[in-house]
Length: 431
Ligand SMILES: [Zn+2]
Image 1 (tube, helix red, strand yellow):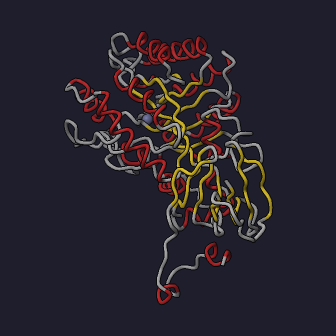
Image 2: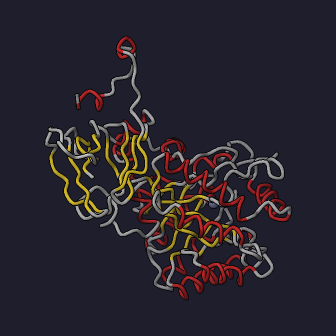
Image 3: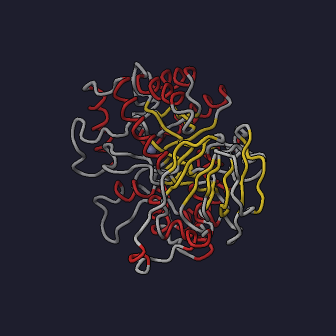
């Protein structure tokens, strides 16, 4: 297909044409400015911003759209949510059909919001691995819309759950891509450390990436992050390990942070931060001043570490709303992280695009708007990163491997109303 008159990130107001062939980008050239007669595969971007798809670096598709089953989270806390989920499993809610229906709806919402890659954790503390099989089936079903990466996630612990280690191994055998963990939920500090050794052993056996729910607790003594960094270096797994949430970092003292950050850099640790969800879950019962319980995105970025954002929850026991709208997640992350500086605003989409791609281990030669990359593209009704965030840009189209997934019309207003709207230079410039 041919996409005409597109803005590109960091290229100012210049418009470009992007040609795709066999699912890859074949050419990026200055806009010819003329219609392409006789072609029915032309998408006129009309000055909108063409970017690679958003990456949801952390989501739980098997939990999506289960809120209220069997009950709502009254305390708002993470640990009540884990108890509700255990009851959800025990009461037979987890069936192949239910997971497929709920997760498909979640993926549709994500794709409709411009997401093209999702890293989904799936609870494998279930003797039947019902949800895992359903999500692996879903991965195949939605291949023409987006790409799912599946993490074997031991919600109730690798050691704390009976047979947890065997279920993790079986999940990897059945086709999970990435090894997960939850050390702060194991029964003791020592068990948490032992569970991480288990995670790395399993990852080595499958040559797999690691993504652990790490220190998701309002406790400055929860310090599994340093254990993960040590193991990453010892095992030669640098750049292949993601710490998700890392909530306890919000409580670490400056002295401990000064010791920790260089170790994280040495391990090339990746981070998946979930600001909307952890703003809701953390800090309950804390004395003033109220802690916010979100990993320090700014400090991590300034240390040169890779930080990506994720939706985490879509209407589940942990978080009652959410729809994979990563611009909304980004807005929360930038606010809680004190990140509304002009330089950050100019490249803020990195946190929901290329940084997520790095977490997922995607080859960056394949991801982006450049010749040779996979033709996975999204059109935003915006002129640049800041504009997209500021005006919560509409997603006008999504393309996967050179084929249109969806398009929707740009909002149109009567001429009389035009004068009262914020100026939309993208729309005007193409006219
Ligand atoms: Zn999570």
